[in-house]
Length: 355
Image (cartoon, rainbow, N blue to C red; front, top):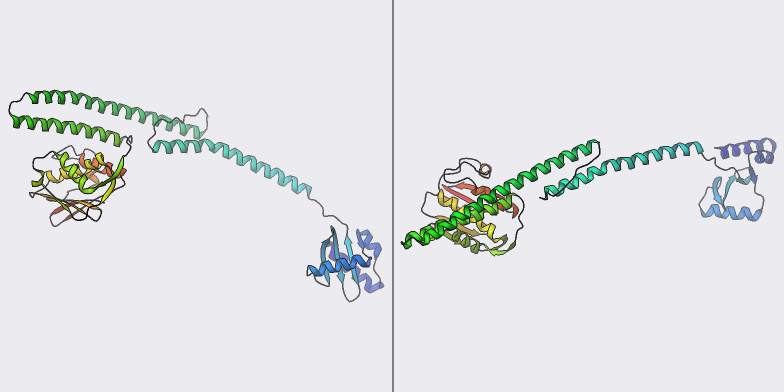
């Protein structure tokens, strides 16, 4: 604006007096460039930058140059004025910026315990109970951390007491089973001896199953997965049933066999429990096990389930012929294998499909 005001004054003064007011230029800290070589260089510089011919402003050799070209005169002026530095604004801005920066770092430092607590919660959710997130601070985050740490301690103690209780029961059951086996050896009748052996073997297998369930439900189990043919898994599961003449009870239809990466012991337990349920609740003489298209289907004729499938996944579901743990075990093991159990009832048949 200052440069344009000077330009207008020079033009108006020239119209009146026919000359340039150099005294005014000097008072405004402007100097008139008279050296022809310098003027040619400036003109060439302005042309290279495609500046207008009538009025242009640019920096040339660290000097602010103004070109004025009209019907009266052509001038090259050097503006020696320096732009004023707004020190007050810079100081205010710097103070505000520093305050915001300090506030930012204070917030980050305040939230750091929250980030640590988040990591501890994530570790806890993955099954690791050996965490400690107690804090000696007095803020709200510390209160939350201390309460969570207290809850973890309570859960850890409950799980440990539960595991100790279950292991003690299983240990105590092993002793009478061992004694029963010894007594069974003294039975003279071979048929009764075989039956007693079968019963005690069944009890021993049940204890082993309870041990696996305890590990699975406490998230303290590592899968040992390998590829197995589904037909082999089904046959191993039938052996676990320990029934006389299983071919009279189970018909195996292998249409399209396939392999699956599973933990052998756990997955055979899944199939065994499904077969056991199918045998218990069947109304026909045989159940059908069908392997086809990467699906295992277990089919038995009988009444449809009276409740939604989700209810049977609950532990100790009300059942007339057992503890109601069968499908709970199945669901727990299939979840860690990332597999799904689907149920449907068609034409008087219960169909359970592992896919």
